[in-house]
Structures are given as structure tokens and as C-alpha cells.
Length: 454
Image 1 (cartoon, rainbow, N blue to C red):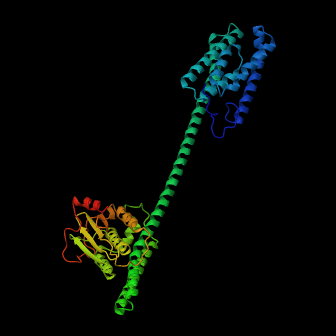
Image 2: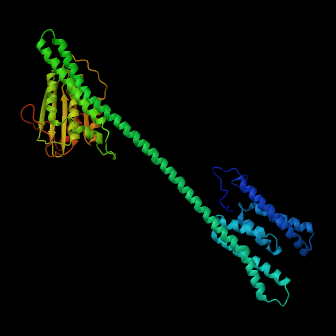
Image 3: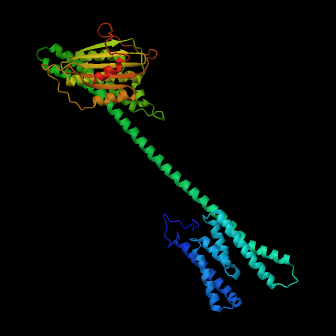
């Protein structure tokens, strides 16, 4: 049978047998002892009426009363025993406690109602018969009936109603406890998720800072190393050229310091909007407002030419100003590609292509095979350049492809989404003659050009 639910096993269970706690076991044993004592006393007149030895009546009462110890395990059985012994007028406490336990348990309500009605009928019949036999004949039948009904209702209805109330209250408390546990688990999950998001944000910020530092420092320092090597090579043969190269080294150093100061100024800014990160991080967009733009590509290419690189800039289409982060990303891609050409392809011919389209801007930097007669400057490589370029382009929803060419060179291609906005910055101008339509294919040729780069 189903128990009352108070002794269900689980965490914190320390009671013997079917009891959940030791206090419950002690309480039930005490109730059973009191019921056994009551039934033993009531068994004496029953034995006399039935013509049995007194000890038999007492033993019968002790056995019947002790059944109450099973009330939490088998409440239906306890009530059935109380109904079965009701003709003997034994077990008042057994019947009352049994009905309460049955009503408070998880037993279906139809069984509770059925057994309660049976107990009520049995109590009424026993009280009516005994009262009618004890009273005088002139006492009206209505009085006996009313008395039997009153006693039967008093012994059966209150325990059932109180048991139903306690059972409903216990189930409500369990439901509230489960809901509180569920909310606590959800809060724990939310806290863990918030910590994961914070860690992700910190990691993204560290990656962004590392990328910015690499882009700002690597290109300028690479050019400085190239010019320093040139100064060393021509210092004695051509002092004037050495002086020019030394001046270029100073210019490169000042530009690198300027860009570093701009970036550090953004990182040290104390007031930042506390909003969810958009597709482009707010810190990147803020830094992009003061960063380089497409109009500075010509100067960027000129710096590589001054370092001795044979580089050509081809521009297709008339493009206005794009969003600041788009222009900065395009500039950084070309800048890092030229830096890689200085590192890995000394003496190679380099072509920089830029194409303006209706809803995107494309760029491609392709170099030929390295000239074996030209000695490189011995620039170190950390392998972060291509990774940083891909991260920048993908963060804006663009496409990035890089790889070796059939001629033995290397090609870097990128396409960034972003329609030109009203001009707020100078537009780019072709550096070498009129624009050519063979710079970067448009339309269906976009995927083909990027695919060839692999």
C-alpha cells in the first residue's frame, strides 16, 4: 500500500525500516503502545461478553492495537483492521488515527471515501445496537438513532477531514520546495552561464588587444627593420641614401607610436556602454573611428615602395566612405599582407587590388615568387598574421581566403560586406593610372576568385 509520503526515502533518511526519520519511528511506536493498552483494557469486557478467558481478550486487544505501528506503511490495512474489530467495541484510537493516516496519504481519494464510509457505517451500527440494548424500552428510537449518528460522525468525519487537509498542505509544501530547488538550480545555471560569458568576453578582449598590437606594431617595425638593413648596406657607399632611409625609420617609429597611443587611449577609456556585444564589438568600432581608412592605402603602398618593394595598387569602381570598422579591417588586411611580403618574399613583385561594389568591398594582395638574388631582412614570424586577418574579416561577416598561387607566390583575398555611406572621409584614388576592371572579379566571379586563392 501507499504510505503517507512523510517517510519517503532520499537524502537525510536515517530511520529504520519504512520510517524516514527516527522521530517518526519513535512516535509511531508510542502510538501503537497507547493503542495496545487501550485495546487490552477494552478487551476485558469483550472477553466476558464472548465467554472467553480474560487473558485472551487482553491478548486480542494488544495484537489489534499494535497494528497501528504499520500506519505509515499500510494505512489501508490499518483501517480495514479497525473496521473488522468494530463489533467488539475495541480500538477507538486505532480507528481514528488510521482514518487520519489514510486521508493524509497518497492513496486515491475514491479508496479513502469508500473506507471512510464503511467505517462510518460500522461505527453507527455498533453504537446503535449497543445503545439500544442498554437503554430502557420507553426511550424513543429516534434518540438512539441520533445518538449513534452523532458518535459515528464524531469518530470518523473529523479525522478524515483533518487528514485531507494535512495531506494537501504537505503536498503543497513539497511542491513549493521542489520549485525552490528548481529555481536554485536555474539560478546556478544562470550564474555559470554568466561566468562563461564573462570569460568569453575576457578572452575576446585579450584576442582583440593582441590582434591590434600585432597589426599596429608588426608592419611599422617590419618596415623599420627593412630600412635599417638598407641603411647598413649603403651607409658607406651612399651616405645621402642612408640618411634618407634613416629618416624613414624615424617616420615609421613615430607612426607606430602614434597608433599605439590611439589604441591605448581606447583601452584606457573608463566609460563604456553596458550593452550586449553586437556583431562587431563596441571596442573595435570605437577604436576604428580613429584608425586608418581606405584613403590611406596609397600612402601605405608608398611606404613599401620606399622600402624597395615593387608594389602596384589597382582600384576598381568609385567607392565612397564605408563604415569605420570596415575601412579599418580592409586597411589592416592589406597592411598585414604587405608585411608578410616583406618577411617571406623579398624582391618579389606585389599587386594590391581594391574593388568597390554595390554592397561590399573586396581586396586582394598577390605576390610573385621571391627573388633569390635579394637578401631578406631576417624578419621573425609568429604565425599570427593570417589568423588575425581571418578573425577581423569573419567578425564583420566577410569571406577570407589565402594560399599559394600556381606561379609560386602567395595570394590573400578578402570580401567585406558594407554599402558605401555618405562620404565622411576622402575616397581612395588610383595610384597607378586609370582603374582597371580586371582587379577583382565581381558578381559570380567573386567565389571563383576566392576559390582560386586556395
